[in-house]
Image (cartoon, helix red, strand yellow):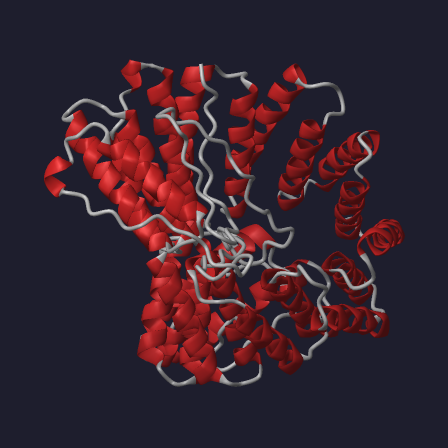
Length: 596
């Protein structure tokens, strides 16, 4: 029985490489798994690397011989020898480095021939051919065109006809998930992967090692979608299967534990993350994987930093830095990534001079990258450095780095989620430096991209709507701001719940907008709700509660009313000192009382 392993569309297809089997057996294997970013500040569902468009001129430079164009009589499509012949023509065209469009034409005509010959019967040849057509579309960057082809391919096999048909359907679902992922449509991507995993599990059984690989792949996708509970369950299942079928301290188990550590870190379970990383490091040491050990040391440093164990974090980072410099060179992006982490650490410990020094060291590496460094690596590094400059109150420099990162990335489906996150951060920077028109334009672009990718209901979408509303307030577009805040409120109530701090922040902004529009009664109703929730969740002495209380009191005075119930603050319960309740470092309100 063939192993159910999907035909993975390559994430970086330099020249087009699609190898067609000589026979009609439809088998394949995944070419890897999606990269999971350590930083997850922006929901970028998919941090995909670029797909270079294939070029007919790429290669050795010598003239390539290509098959002569063959005229096919359309009336002969029902000839059973025509489909395999056209597939061979497609294979020869690709192998010669000729135009992918010509190979696509051959593959499409082959599919038509297989369909004509099979009639209403399920045809594995047709399913395989459609997978090839979709793969060529993806290699050309036409992911939207690949999706309907794959959806059709999935409908061709019949699971009742055995494992070969199950393999074809599984491969179709996984390739469909890859295509949706490249388009930034994470929800549809996850749905396709889950359908593929279900078919694979039913065919091979719960504990097959190939099921473990698909579980880990799907877990990584859930991490990218910020669905950490689902990712944790799948990763636990993967670990159990690998423990059953692999030797102790295997490379497979080490990879599982690194992913589990990332999930635990995202869930703020740092001690569990540290335990998984230590076990993964021991497995890598046993297998002589020095560079992987250094990468794990970086992750261990991240956990120590989150636990405020700064000396241990510095030791881990320096240990990794020594290995990276000796094995990859002083100017490798891996070295720059450690510099950025050290810069972040020294900022958090108040050593701003050291922090900026490490930022400058990383920027020097990115200014003269070593051969093989991808634009995505540089863009990600610049984005992280930008966050540090923002933290040290240098928004102009942070904005300049974000703009530089944007220029490095082409506006393609593969980069869309990364570009969306950078544009959102640029909008925040524009807002901070008072360039409100540009901030609104950035947020508007982000919203358009999220809508196009089907992410209209994510918490990130709601937060961006809120930020755009704030920019509209500064531009005195109060009616537009109210509409944006109302939409953001609906999304965040659904995604985060009515008591989440982000949701309450939008409530506050909406109340302030209603106040500015003269809708005082609506503003009072929202503020009374906010104050009730904050008193219950934060306590009466919290600075935010005091701010809300003052705003509500002012509005009630304007409306000639008093608050329905009087809250007993800590200041009233104790022998209070009016000077003793000063708020230090509380969030300030500006304009109409908007929370940024």
